Image 1 (cartoon, helix red, strand yellow):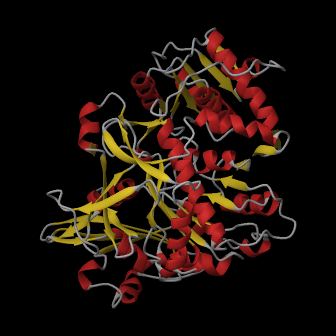
Image 2: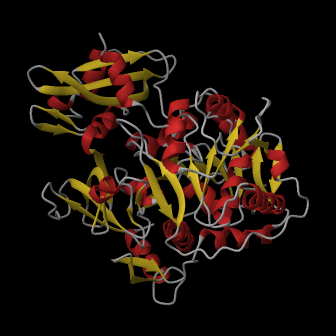
Length: 562
């Protein structure tokens, strides 16, 4: 695929009257690119999926739910929420659980009745759960057994109705078992709801670095435009034949293996939404395990993998990789953080389609800002792609002046996908979103073709004697050594220079490497001042958060503690 072919496909798909045509429209006082054919709400998109009937929808271990059964349970739960929970349009329903099928059913029931989902982080401690419930003030909380145990441990449990699933514990009077809420064999149709595009859809909490996290408020317009942006990308790939053919024995029904939490936009907006919209099958995991993922790829034949790059690396480097059939995968990569260039090459050589993929987005953008896949990605392996049709981007300096191509600065995004703001935090909202432009906090470079390279998080740069060092650049060079399985780079305090680069490394089994050997490998690949001054080799995998990202701050603090 050439860039010219891609640009031609883009022009055809977004031309006036085409499926992905867009126009400028004023939304809440800001002129934005809005799809002409966008549905008004996510309820409309979900309602259309009832036509898929008995086709598989949700797969979890030995459980299978069809579209028909899912729609039945969604209607039943919505009726229960309205009658017993007092939930109506604009009210909130919190969901706190693992990636169980019930998470998805509760999600669709809530948003389809015009209510708002609060996606609570399933890793939260009891005190964090209490904060999220107080901050979001939901009318009902839906939990699994593990989260119920944490909630019950609180001295002052919030007094809201609870629906508990997969829970063997005794429940108090104000709690109801899931089975009782979805028992109606012939529930009524969904309650009527006049949902406007800019009504709240969902609140996802960002990963705060200090204090409690902020609740990012996603609208129906934002989620719908994210689905359509992703649909545009898929359609463009089809036009230029940048897709692997369907493998022998593979079902025509699209399928996706969801390895990341549904309480993040990656799992929810970027995999649940689009896969559901096209009538696909969603395969859920209890927890991340590369060996189990390979078994599910072999058995369920997914074409996509909802993962972060570290997960994709574990798959292609797994010692049993060649024992499983991965031919159904049309691409492999991940979001949440950039793919290191060596992984682009490994994916190209490992999966039959040879299509590495990546994307860039934030909780604050309701999903993806850019996508990049296949031959163009292999040609530009350090980039995350071009902005999607209804997304505008620019890079600015510290004074807010837009910079020319090739110059690094903070990346700003303007689009219908940008959140309404942060829940109960007007000052933080005003600081993050100025005249419709979201300040991402990411340092980026936009090249002459409009492709974006994420240099690093602004706050994660190592500033060595006034010289900025991008951690991602150093990590990319480290990963070029075949012995390295995991690597993170971070700032280490230095009395003379302020800070210097440090690195934590995990080696692949059966390999050997020491600090001198790694520095010799980096010599010539990096300028001397970018080579880590301190290197730690770890015996166990590096810790990650719920979305699979490495916990750099935790690792650094533990390594530097006295």
